[in-house]
Amino acid sequence: MQSVHKQALLGSTSMLKRSIHFNLSPEELIQQTITYNQGLLTKTEAIAVNTGAFTGRSPKDKFIVKDALTSDTVFWNEFNIPMEERHFNILYNKIMDYLSERTVWVRDCIACADENYALPLRVINETPWANLFCYNMFLRPDASSNATAPDWKIIHAPGFHADPQTDGTRKQNFSVINFSKKTVLIGGSAYTGEIKKGVFTILNYLLPLEKEILSMHCSANIGKRGDTSIFFGLSGTGKTTLSTDANRKLIGDDEHGWTADGVFNFEGGCYAKCIDLCQEKEPEIYAAIRKGALLENVVCHPGTNEVDYSDNSITENTRVSYPIHYIKNIAVPSVGNHPNNIFFLTCDAHGVLPPVSKLNSMQAMFHFMSGYTARVAGTEEGVKEPKSTFSACFGAPFLPLHPSYYGAMLRKKIEQHDVQVWLINTGWYGGGYGVGKRISLANTRSIIHSILNGELERADYKVLPVFGLKIPVDCKNVPAEILDPQTSWKNRSQWLHAAQELARQFVCNFTKFRDCTDQVILENSIIIEDVPHAV
Image (cartoon, rainbow, N blue to C red; front, top):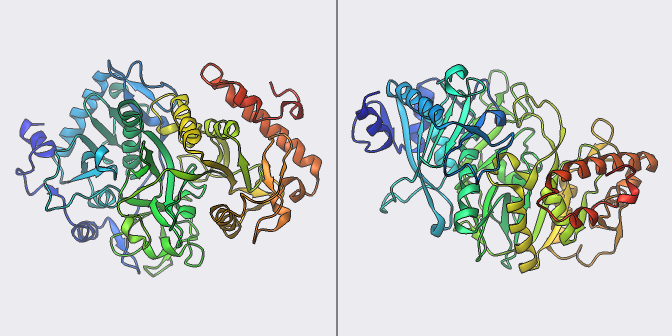
């Protein structure tokens, strides 16, 4: 591609006006999406699109360029796959040549709501609706202000397919981060979550190393008394739903940093799952699906433009993105005080863990480093039903540094600020997936509210065998029989067997941290004598 084209795409936008759309309004992007026949205007005036072959992330196709900067700092594993610099250069030149012959949409935006740590971005998209996604999800500079020059470039070209034989990729799709050149290349996949998580990965590297800020895969909100809560959990465990509370101000629904002064949101929008969404259970999210919101992979009722949120024929991972101000009750700016409560959300497909348990500091570190949940159907390519998994720090695919780095930072902050930590199971009780029942959203909300108003702090507790978890005897508006998983199963011995099996999985997983984590954490989190052959 000629250098003038590269300059037009990455630097000045004064050239090639016909092929480059710069910082268009949401209204313009929606109209272009409709004009190009790439989306449908729904009954609520949200625009609905189909992301094609990929309706979730593809973590096996995510690369980081291995060079002098990253060679000894990145934790190379199945999520941080090294790519040679020469392959990045080949891909970069190919993707730029590809875009030089197409209309593109360019947007300057910002990550990090705390202006002391703002990261200016320039995003280049092949479709107008992907650019709308970036408008929704990142912070929008004031048009009247002197915007800082972009620090990072995110280049998104879903129509470009790599050649694995020459480009160093596994398949035709890829996401590559080059920390030295401050560039992200995404190709072969139109799933917008790749953009969002690419930026998250950048911040998970830069903020802990350069600023001593703990980056977290969590949602956060703040109460009327200034009490802040954060919710850790993988996609589908309830981060967005549980943090969106009419009685509390939303700080953010997915990604945050914890500084010496408090917490702040990385993003300017929300990216909510909307499978089985209904107004009664999630009124705030339901109301946010209006003009300017972007729906992904939803299906409308036949012959109408009214979305059928129960339809999973495309994917379980139906999504909607919208600016955070579409939620009525938000914190402005998106910052909060040091947390009073930390919630670890897990979707336990085995039905072993209780709906709520109070963790001591050792247990908190154990469950944070373990990051146990069930991968919810549709969140990633190839996942069709809940699947047990361990994802360190509740976000291993996005952590360029060793998990123990983040774990040590969290432990220090919990102890420094005397934070209460809770394990919340939003999965099953009375048996595993296919046998037991899913814990209702209403029950989980009642548990959260009882914690926030101090009722569970004053409750009576008993200790659950095997995991040694403290579980409340009673909780307002929650049936007593579901609080103790032993009694919710028809046969206690079956629960004990399932609990011992899950504990063995926990212990086996934790061995990966043997060389970098105090083993006292493990010894104080699993009652070894209750787990035959656990170690």
